[in-house]
Length: 282
Length: 256
Image: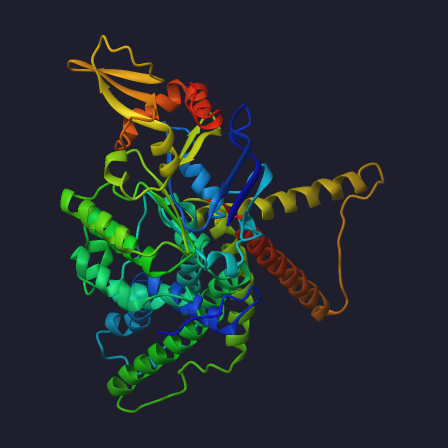
């Protein structure tokens, strides 16, 4: 669906952010895009949405270069920025004005989601709290039925019940015909929604695996300090270590510890990737 | 709810929707400006009556609309300067940059709203205000006189249209070119360009005439209409170039 080839980009010529980045995003997946601060996650989303142009290389959506910002392409993508402002109008007016640009916009879904999020449609959008505005835009993004949904820190600014509502709504939404990219630092909020983990570091994708393959290849264990089990990466915890190990035959499925995995990817990139390449020998 | 076909060519229905969207986003601010401009004009036109203590029978209302036109054009140019404001902030730029419409439609919507639409508002407002003032004067003078009512189909309207077209195109370019204080920056840019042009012309003339023994240089055209025609052609060339540049800059615009 999205194809990025040899993307090179720099805000300052002396400090390139991406140097020949290659990436593919497929329909039917929900990608968790992770990276340290300044890794370029937001910049990458801006490139995918056509809001930024690469210095060289190309980014296409269904074969069309996004930088041309053609209506056919733009009507099939929606970006939810981390920082955003909404115009001074009520929710219904916003829907009436922006909704027609998305050919598959689902008005009923929109109102139902607003109801679920407890956002009053009659209230002026500028009078809503940041969290309420974010919920409104999330509802609009989902109701647009755009094939590509880019979400930059969608749970930032949401209170605990709202985060849970967000997870519930996302889980209930049929994304089989859509590609969702969620860029976030708050891994615990979204670990149940993501089915592919992509890590951006030093201007390139250093890890890109499905949740299923991670479960098949790795196991996340709490080991005693004197345990003999070889691990790829570990962090000390009270009474032992929290470790990422190569999954062995007798191991049961474990829940992915996204924080540990992310730290492991950053610290032990080669070892972790090799676990997926050579049948699990780190 | 209507659904617009996502065709990549210019679509009339989509253009209308972009116009509607842009209008709704700005309407409160525009209305406030319009009311302020109308208020200023009304006060200035009724001022002679206030000064004369509502007694002068000789005062019959405004006969010159240049002040009113200046105020409306000023308001129009302020509106024009602000039309691409959302593109200059990352928090709002996404709304316009990712809106599924062509750059041409986004540009045309901005131009239609700030030129033909605002011009119609100017003319209608001018007509209404002049009518109101004439009625006030007529009541006080003991008889209605409609001779001072602004006529929309007049040479003044034609002059207003051409001049506003020219300035609007320059301020539309300034709206996309400058990030903040677009109106003042555009005004400053125009003044700088004009001064530079005059200075360069003077320097060129000096170089041409230096050493040739010619003390003064004059340029005269026999046909008085020719100079007017040349200046109008120049005006339109500059205006169309500005509009083209605005479109190209809008097309190449990125989030900042």
